[in-house]
Amino acid sequence: MDIDECVVFALGKAYQQVHGELKRRLTSVGLTVPQYSVLAGLWEQDDRTSAQLRERLVMDSATIVGVLDRLERAGLVSRTPDATDRRLVRIALTAKGAALRAEVERIVDGLNSQILRPFPADEVMRLRATLRAIAKGDQ
Image (cartoon, rainbow, N blue to C red; front, top):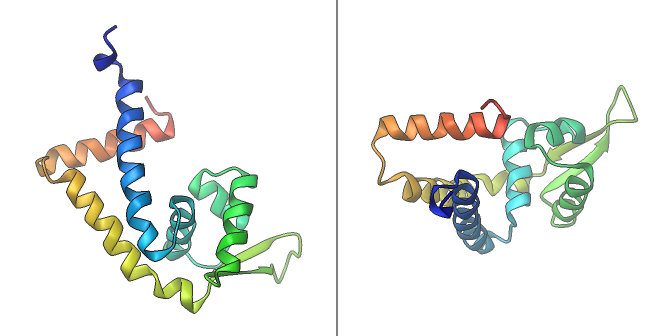
């Protein structure tokens, strides 16, 4: 098989391209891509347990703990024991973390628009559905 026909290679190269550009753009607000992912998970639903965030973002424990440590030191999130089950830790946005949302979403929306601009709307819908299916392992 020619490498240009290899879906795995093409997906890997596409990932490198867009991930690198997102990483570059997020530096303007002092975030890494994993930090953005955790904040986006909290903007979607605040006050989650770390286990809920790990599941939603498909991150391993070691990665999310490190990301949460850095976000907490930056004053963007807080961690508190769950009121009913002290074995659980709840993660909540601080005012500073919530305030970043509009600017970060503007950055991410801009990149999404740039990437998808060449495609007609029906192809964008198919592309999103295909990527979700691949990510879930539904192929």
